[in-house]
Amino acid sequence: MATFYIKHITKYSYSSAVIDGATLTRLHPINDDYQKVVSHLISVTNNPFIETFIDFFNNRVGTFMVTKPHKELNIISEIEVITQTRLFPDDSVSAKEQWAELKSLECDINFIDFLKHKPFNGSDAILGLINSKDLKSKSPFKAVLELCEYVYKNFKYIGGITDVNTPIDEVWNLKAGVCQDFTNVLLQITRMLGIPARYVSGYICPNDIISRGEGATHAWIEAYIPFYGWLGIDPTNNSIASENHVRLAIGRNYNDCSPVKGVFKGNAKAELMVEVEVNSDKNKLSTTIKNDKVNSELSNSYQRNLEIMQQHQQQQ
Image (cartoon, rainbow, N blue to C red; front, top):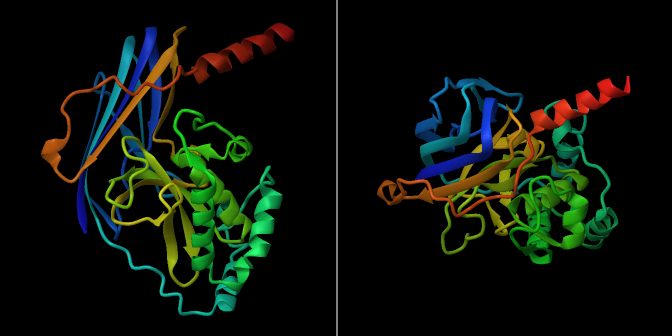
């Protein structure tokens, strides 16, 4: 069991004043038998009312709108959470019986979305890997651990060369990226093997074994292990998700789990800064917003869609 205090700051800065900023957040941590949320506070510029609902994947989603002109939008999420240690699958059921159980899930509405995959640049290589290692002769648990190790050993952890929109084909060619890239690759190849897998967003508290992914939101997969359930696998750190992993949301891919996304009205350029602190001591969290982690310039999807509509009108 472990207690963590998390501060997640999202800051949008605009080149000129904007209005009607509509934002959707998935910043509410999952609350279940393995993760108890003790407290959670979200504060937003201009203090708008935050409405919440439960989405298709059982994530709690927040929505709000800042209608007044503003040149900056700060979203600060502060969490206290207690996580529990999970037992590993005992793997006592025969591999043949476990694969038969997975086969029966192919038409199950609860798993179809987590088995879908499309061919990509590495498809032939992965099929060769599956055959050469004879992965289906092993239990799904052992097989997915081998795939996790494959991603960890064959991809370099390099920040700044990809973003959340980088396609898996490009990541495969680069053989490098960060946590969401490692996760996307493992997600794809686990599904190719016939094991349901889902994307997880959250946080990680570094220790002597786990170190990659701190200072930002983290990502990993959950693979469905027959007669056990969903098991977190972290390819960025080549580890099974433990009490050091705090889950925010699950889904088919990043788009289902994106912590913050939104639109605004205004002819302005936007820059995004994200800062995450995770600590086992509440008193060690900082009290001020720093400006040392700035992502590249963002495009406003509202403005972009408006331009597309205007082009269509001119063509008619």
